[in-house]
Length: 305
Image (tube, rainbow, N blue to C red; front, side, top):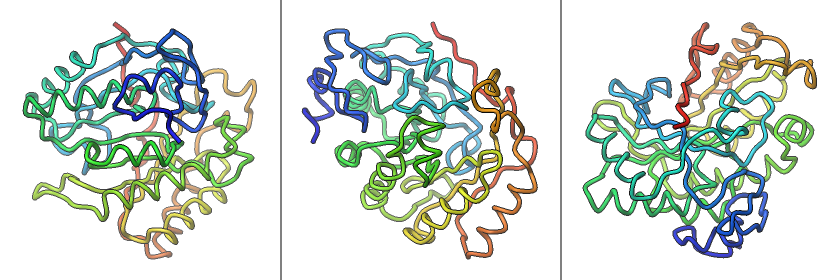
């Protein structure tokens, strides 16, 4: 159970927003697993063009990248903000203003990237922004490691859920993301997301207004694990959700020191085999990535000021 409603600053006093349930008093400056205090911290707030086509469209997605993270993925492309804490503090009022500025720039939605550790401030910001005319769909872009109870409290605030489903096996979840209960928590959270928003709805321009897209990043040498993830998603939800198969694994510096099995590029033939596997299963609602959509040029710059 959450100690306090997520739209209350008191939720920071005994923080249990994510499955880590650290219970620290972030309002008093204590830091739990995510590394954040009770101040909302962001690293970038700009139109973003590299999401799925129904999210980015032609005008871009209004992406707000939040600092900190509830996971510890060793291959994270955004480690300078997720693990390093790079970014700048912002008040809910200032965050609301940035959302409205994004709206004025013509973006298709407000895209909250890795937001869970900052939810109380984000909810306040959304309330302010909506009172000032924000009516764009809100996208909840997360790593999947969420509490179903937290997701349940987002009803009415989130229109599109964009979670990851990284692993089924405890072995890989623990080794690569420091969360051996990843599948259990992610499955329950995605169940709540699907129950909450229902089947996918698009506007006349093909921009998603409501629905769930589950991302899966294929890792080198783990075709069999990826097949397990796809099996589960399709058996559970059929074509009621979209599945986004990502081939953008980027080998980060020094990863070979502790994880030599990940110190290589993704085998394109294995990725194509996974795409064929999905097609043979009858999956219709699927996004795939073309060759070449990988590398540092696809990693956003984080201002940190």
